[in-house]
Amino acid sequence: MPSHTRVRTALSLTAASLLLTCAVPAAGAAHPRDATARVPAASGPGHSDDATLRGRIMKTLRHMSLEEKVGQLFVTYVYGDSADTAAPADVAANRRLHGVDNARQLIEKYHVGGIVYFAWTNNLKNPQQVAALSDGIQHSAAHHRTPVPLTVATDQEHGVVYRLGPPATQFPGAMALGAGRDAGDARTTGLIGGRELRAVGVNQNYAPIADVNVDPANPVIGVRSFGEDPGLVASLAAAQIDGYEHAGVSATAKHFPGHGDTAVDSHTGLPVIDHSREEWERVDAPPFRAAIAAGVDSIMSAHIVVPSLDPSGEPATLSRPILTGLLREELGYDGVIVTDSLEMAGVRQKHTDAEIPVLALKAGADQLLMPPNTAVAYRAVLDAVADGELTEERIDASVYRILRMKFRQGLFENRYTNPSDVSALVGAPHHQAAAQAVSDRTTTLVRDDEDVLPLTPGNRRVLVTGWGATTTAALATALRDRGADTVERETGLSPTAARVEETARAARDQDLVVVATNKAGDHPEQRELVAALQSTGRPVIVIAVRDPYDIAALPGTRTYLATYSYAPVSLESAVRVLHGEIQPQGRLPVTIPGADGTGVLYPYGHGLTTAG
Image (cartoon, rainbow, N blue to C red; front, side):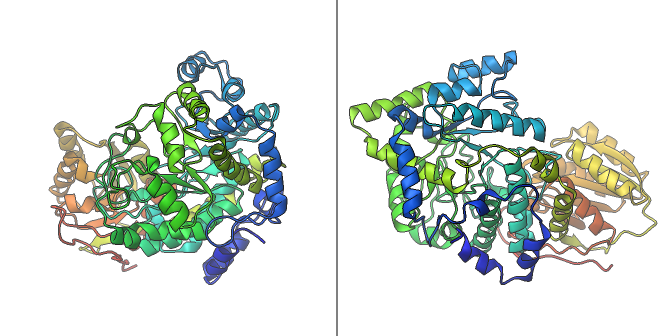
């Protein structure tokens, strides 16, 4: 039985999802998920394995040494654009981090179970290079004593967090999808995004965000979340998971037990979530329950303290009551639990780097992501088994789940990429068209008090200003394509007083001003810029290209759109709305509070249409 029958049935109730099944044709070889559909992988919560699958997993497990099994638990990064890279800077970085020169040596020395890709590690230059790197990594693993394929992972959330850039298809992010309210569109992002990832050899994606963003000041989640409504987040997360996993990529619901109500970034501190157990059940739990019902392959833990769930003060990543008691036993999840990065400050407050991986395993984690020192972490787990702090049976339980995920993906049958898929799928025209269509359903018109929109032909001279050189250039280009005579003045996150004055002076010579803002509430200089532009008497259109909350920090704004994303498709959609080519269909997936953080400036669900 296919692994996601229940979710597919639910989604098929909407016409949009039925169309999506036909609108994104397959290219190249059969999808890995389809090829292994004979293996039952999910039955309600958790996973149930038939005798054939169990036998294959146990046969592999019996052939593995303890060192190989411990290596399977680790997922880390490695510098370089090939498995055997000899670039001096990459070699030096790898030696500092791992004591090896390249990915091949890392796999040989530590038997790691997975590699995670980043641009800053020089892994992601172009699709052909990424596919070759993936194949080189898998080739290295294939020549081991026990040739277990690797999980190759990345964070391709879309919107403001993505790793594989153009020419790969860029979708708007989660909050934009929340504004669109369409589960079919969420599934499309997973299906297309997953097919392009799998084409370049990425088989595990650390997405979607299942956190419910109920704190507008959240510094780490924000627009990465689908919104503030648990039901909306649950339905869209489940739909996106369904898309990813049908594309042959393991989705990852994150960050359990819920990172949406915090003003502290767990990269730099240890957040404490003060939700009661009842609040957790009502607000944070529904998306994770939906993810489990959807058969999600992996769930990522959060480096957050939730006293109502575990009063010990340990972050969830190191909490047995949360990972085992709550996620495994109460929610019935038996898939892979992957930690958030073990380099982050949120998990390193109370314990050493040798203690943390052992504590995470004791809590119930399976994959240990990005330990700060691979040698220290690897040796610590081996020593814990030798000392009896961890049993080999405990290691086997995690390795079993990891192997099951790899078998379900079809990696043991075919771990390599198909060159024809790289050219046929990555950035394919029909993928780009689908991304634009999705984006066109997400733009939200929050305010248009003077009925400026749609723009009339008389608005020929336009100043495009605000945050982001790429953003302002994209907006200016789209406006020029429609006949405008544009002037660009990019001002950055925190423009100086001189830059504000210069930009306002330029605005006086124009018919219209379009200004892009990005987290204006955190950057008062953007408020000064918008106020100066408004003082010129020219019509000013504000486009919030990240947080929709910006308008609370911009008093006097008369025309305001939210795109939730500065992806090119999102900016194109905004200009289409400006010109009346499409109606703004997005509705706020969050409440916008007043400037002081209290009251309601614009309610959840608010959204205007234009007169065009």
